[in-house]
Amino acid sequence: MALRRDALVLAGHPLAGLALSTPAAYKQRVWTPSRLKPELVL
Image (cartoon, rainbow, N blue to C red; front, side, top):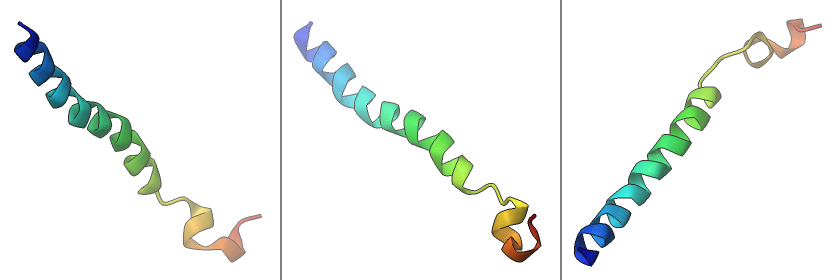
């Protein structure tokens, strides 16, 4: 039983990291007008 729990914990860490980093990576890929043409933004 403990071995199964240990395996779940080991498998859960990469999955949790992926779930937490995906929204942050997506947010960085959004191109706003200020990033495209900073001189045109008021």
